[in-house]
Amino acid sequence: MLAQLNAEQEEQSTLAKSLPAEGGEDDQAIQAAAADAGAEPANPEDAAGAEPALAKSMTVGGEEVEVVDAEPLIKSLADLTGRVDEHDSVLAKGLTGALDLIKTQGEMIKSLSSRVEKLSGEGRGRKTVLAITERPAALEQLAKSEQQQVHPGEILAKALNAQAAGKLSGQDVARCEAALNAGSTVPADILSRL
Image (cartoon, rainbow, N blue to C red; front, side):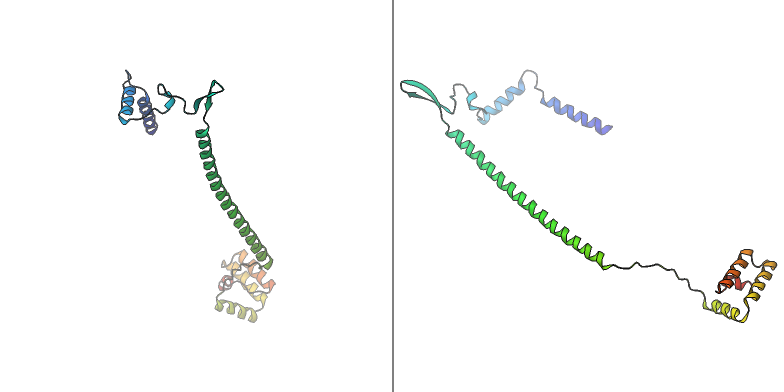
């Protein structure tokens, strides 16, 4: 809000500076400064008694005719065409540079697309991520040795007795039975509580 107020105040002070002072003092000061510097009026035709720069009078067949000298006009047109030629050459250079840039970008796009096609044709197989958890070797050997020495029915009977004693839950007994039916080892946490 304060910044907006400051901006408005600056704008008002700028506008106030552009207004003429009362009594025409500013106009007189500007004219005096121009006279001191020896400045000529901006338009020479505005000076009193000046003739037009391009007009001359001639007598043709006893009749006075006003003829316009076109030499300054032709010179000014020649200057304009020279400037246009300069602008055309600059524009041509710019367009040539832009065209070269577009061509190089086109070549780069072609090379990148050929690389993509080449890489897509190679066919890398998918990598699978497999998390392997190592079991402690001692418990695994103990479980295998117990299963080899003990009949699966005996292990199941021990699990049911441990459940009755409150050492195993019904879910643990079910896991033990599922492992025995699948022919795999009984989980180590269950074997340790038997």
